[in-house]
Image (cartoon, rainbow, N blue to C red; front, side, top):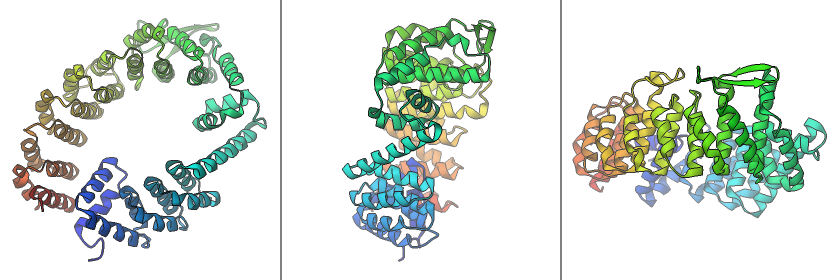
Length: 489
């Protein structure tokens, strides 16, 4: 039977070519679990599909996800395709397969490429494959592009001031500079950064232009630290102290600074990014003298975005304790900060966070949260908490996670199911099977079914048999696959 004539094959292609890491990685694992003969059949079918204009893009994506070396030759041929998006996806897939025979064709394609997006994919593929030839070409290309851009903006690539201004304006320049800073006297660069950054912070707030200049000064101090000069951390520390000493006690969401021209009030959108940058850099420096001002900043936290989280993260890096992240998870007025803290606590694996994560999993009211949070955004906190509880793998989380299988948000239901499987408790199969029978969302059903198939427990068969009659093709395909896996067919 020709490839893609069955429901199973169509679902396989959809999943393998998905931009979702979960979907594509799960699909690859599922395919390999079917054995080498089935992998060969699908790979050969996808290679044939590269010749079909309507299927070439998805087929190339799928071949990259599988990573089979048999696809290298056909993908190299696709680098000559007339459509730039097809050339780009072929390059991306070659970068995933990492076969060194693709280096020369990718270099040739990049050298002749006229579309920036396709060129970016070809460049990244060469970075991914690596090796002496690819590295030499990439270095030469970066060098030429850096020098050309510097020449375009100022006709003076040797001037440190121009180099630094470019670095601060554009992340690309920082990348280029990291690769080629041997061409510039690092001592001169650091001295320039230092002189630029040490200007008094309180003089920079009267106009938007001056506020932008302050951000540059903060970035400059951070760059000093990242270049290995301790003065960067000290300058940032000085700026952090200025902020902590000037919060307006009557309105915690404002910073009141005295300038030469009189008082100036900053609001969250203005000081939030600056405080976040300062906190990040101080955390990177691991300078213990930063602990006290960072703690004061945390107590005066803003409702703005992830400021509270970035401060807590910095304190964790310096002191190695998760208490500050737990504080943000419990108290921060920003839902994005709470979500980030939950995710980090899961990565750290500190079980002292368990009670706070369980409480976050049940969060359904905006009480105590800031104006930037609405009921419709709270799912992000619950979703992050569910994933973190799975990482902690503590049996005490099982009951709240089972309850979360009925959460109003479908992403949280899926995260809770994955967390339960990660904990590997005896109640997992029973709970997932029951949740499957009442679930209305097709995407959630697919995930529940895949997880039940992974358990290999025949207690799931009744729920999976019922799913074979579902109105959605993908649900039926996944149910059939899960039953075969459980039965060892």
